[in-house]
Length: 390
Image 1: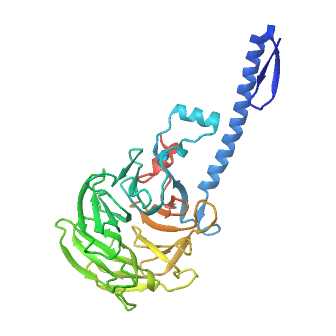
Image 2 (image 1 turned 180 degrees about the horizontal axis):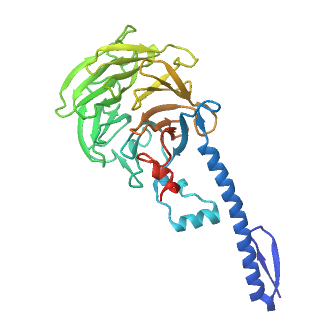
Image 3 (image 1 turned 90 degrees about the vertical axis):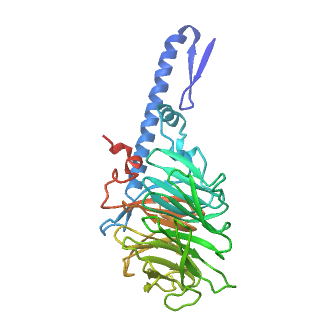
């Protein structure tokens, strides 16, 4: 009688029954050799692939690099800590643990603070929290009190308390860094279309964007005291003059306390002081760099530079504090890839200067690192680059 054993390369070897133990040892050694060889080849390919990803730089050579693409968030499984069993499973089957877990449904905005990345998901109706500090994932806004209906814009204060603009509730919902509900400000009577929110670092003053619509002149920013919920004042109304808005979309506070507002219908960014006084504006309609086609999200970095996400241009452009274009990142693609977008929306910059950029169509958040920051530094660096740990 002859036994057959199938190897990892799908070839069969014959083994006479009387010699089965001897041939079994030889066959097993052959299998191990084949797996190691294939694994080594796959590892080499993976290392080459990782090197290629890690070398995606902006602007491209020969210019000096300013940002590196680092990582993309797709699902909750990416926050699960890898075990030895996971490594063996990936080695033997090719299955990656990052493919497990709950995927983002339709990410709209993002805010990063203290090693946590908060992502508003309009389909799943919650905030997805990627907690890099604790290698954990959880959600906010799925239970009473603090149940969310359609979360859009996000912001955090210096304590990493989270502020969520919910367009259906017409309220800004406030949570602590662990996701515990603290308070709600506003209500459906206060806004026509609540879209975004910004808060000062102390968490005392809140700026909520009322996008308005064709039937109202109230295209404005409403300002509240976060402690008492008291309405302090508004600034802006529908128009095209300085300090006026046509469908404002997003707002962010810079390190100097100035407020940058995306005035989408006027294809510009307007800058105000913390009391709503107009300071300056930049931008115009067009498809060239430095112009806007469908501006949507906005963020400022620790140096005061302003980042504007443009859905139609499928990129974000970076301007200095005076509105001079510095560079842009991103282009329209048909398939998900680093810095490739179809429907980009929200953007944020953490205290380390890392950029977080959402795309609703590809259901992802791309992360970029400033060239001046070493890979293993910052709030999330040692999680993204564990090989750099001692």
